[in-house]
Amino acid sequence: MSDFKYFKHLDDLDPETQYLVHRATEWLEHAYAPYSKFHVSAAVLLEDGNIVLGTNQENAAYPAGLCAERLAVFSANAQHPDKKIKKVVIVARKKDQKDLTPAASCGGCRQVMLESEKRQGVPFEIVMLSHDHKWVLAPSAASLLPFAFSKNNL
Ligand code: THU
Image (cartoon, rainbow, N blue to C red):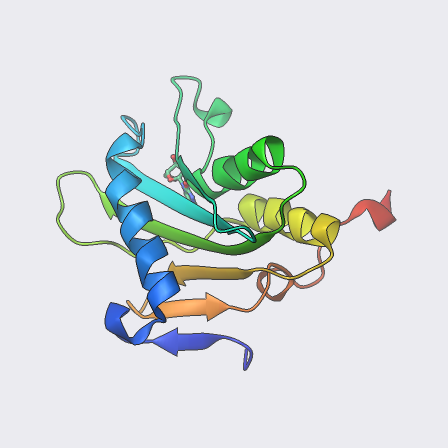
């Protein structure tokens, strides 16, 4: 899709996004992923500059676990209900590895981010490492989930 921007190196991203990548990466150690060993962290930047961090939290009852970005976005909405989300940055790393690994947000998280975006009435950017190891910047949650289910379908 032409709306997406791609960046080969972290340094090519704007300083704000680089900082969010840094904060999310730092927070990866707080992921609780003993089953998948796939650690994910998300940094949610709010309009007032606050940053809400979240990591994936797994559970022995597997489906009860939660993805990092979903947790972070819900948490931002719960803790700062009046603040709009400006950007969500998602990073992942496999246990005991040094480098980040690609992680495209799952469909359920795209659905959650889309509703959050609709609620606030303003699109927010989503940044993640794509499968070809390029940073991808999506201009909105809507751009990541065409033909989405919404409350209008109810
Ligand atoms: N996971 C995320 O946190 N975000 C995603 O977008 C994809 C998957 C987590 C869920 C689970 O804890 C682990 O990664 C493996 O699927």
